[in-house]
View 1 (cartoon, rainbow, N blue to C red):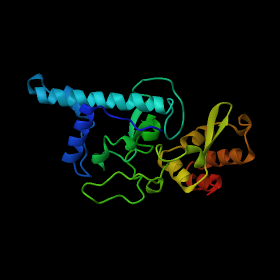
View 2: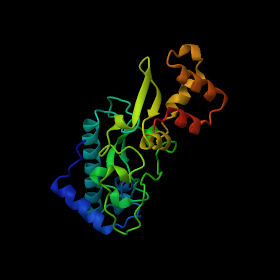
View 3: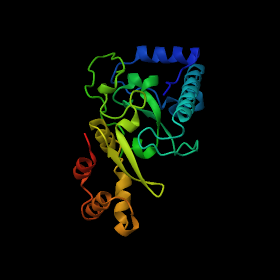
Length: 233
């Protein structure tokens, strides 16, 4: 996947942003929204310019990765041909709250659905194998630095097999340790839990899947069991 490229004005803004921030500062991703809530008398030309360029950068990021990812979420791979803001979120792979310095780093950006990126999904969970304590850390540029599948560094199909039933996702089968971490951290078991409300006669998939569905009906807390049975790592 090609990383987003900024124009000269955007790149200058991003460079100044990086220089002014340390690793654990929150950043200014929501600054343009905060600007809109300011009283008119407080909106100086400098603030207007800052809010405008942030809106422009955010728009270019989303448009770029929607095309690059073919309108598919980076983590669950579900496709939705819409630009609706509630459907797509600009995802910071290393979250911007703990590492604000990576807020506009092209390799830290992708598109995800709200479920994979929300509080019950990845959210602000730690995805770095060894988080840096440096004040000005460099963005890790290897697959081995991340617990979960990284859309810029990893081939998704090497880590997770998506099993479907009648066009609907039934379960995400981890093929590696990184695949297991992605299933757990991004809440991908929600697809399997969905079928726990159905009777097994409505599911003509493998005996193994039907067995897991039956177990989930009686005990929805079987995360470890599901991951163990479906892992080939």
